[in-house]
Image 1 (cartoon, helix red, strand yellow):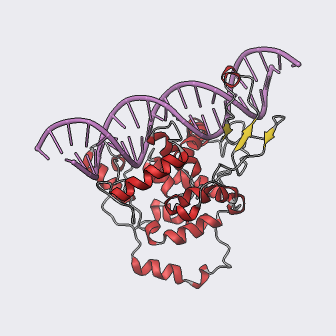
Image 2 (cartoon, chains in turn red, blue, yellow; image 1 turned 180 degrees about the horizontal axis):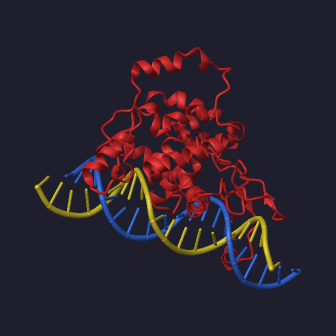
Image 3 (cartoon, chains in turn yellow, orange, cyan; image 1 turned 90 degrees about the vertical axis):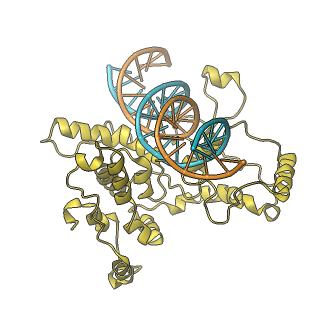
Length: 287
DNA sequence: AATAAAGCCAACCGCATTCGC
DNA sequence: TGCGAATGCGGTTGGCTTTAT
């Protein structure tokens, strides 16, 4: 657990602030005000769980569901690790999905082992829109007390509620060319709106992401994590799951990865989904 | 139509870890 | 080396929506 340095990312400045940086920050605050009355923690969460342009919104596909189940068997409640293997999904989303759907299903199956796949509760399939919605304020006390329009970031069904078209954030008064550092934020809105086209039914974009993650995906740090926890605690996941050998490296090396990515059967036309990679998570298949 | 119950999910909270001074 | 601040993470909660009665 713990954090990596917040400024460890390439290209980010660390250490003492320079006069120029101070000037830029001051100019920005002067131009746009102090803005949000939010703590950094809250802002971070909002960014990570919702605003990030690469967030994939929409139903958890069957492939992703299987992946979550397998990873959870492997890692337990290490949501961030699990989320790291599901491009575009957040730890919070996966955690929620597990708590509301998969966990209950697992529990139900455990209590009645003979039953096969149980539908997720009443199967109120979430029907996510691809963009945040601004709903008419409800008649709740909170809503009537304030005239602030609340952006309903929740995935909600279109009901009788009136949906007001989302107004873009007031970014037009920011000249992107003058604020390169804020570029991600300035382009964010557009990217979120484009997420609809990013959605795919069968996880092909996940595959693309896997490609882009490349070896990082194949040699991901599960073993390191498990090894670390093995050192830290006697009650560790390995002990709980004797099928795992924390010291045993994953059966992927550079050559294999190269082989895999150059394999002609994996060309653009190959119809693939995460099922084809399921064996990667099958402990029995591990050497 | 009204109300209760269940489901869902964004955000909050507290703890552990790491950084920078 | 110690300490305060920042950050990452998992657990939990609050409030809204949907479904059932």
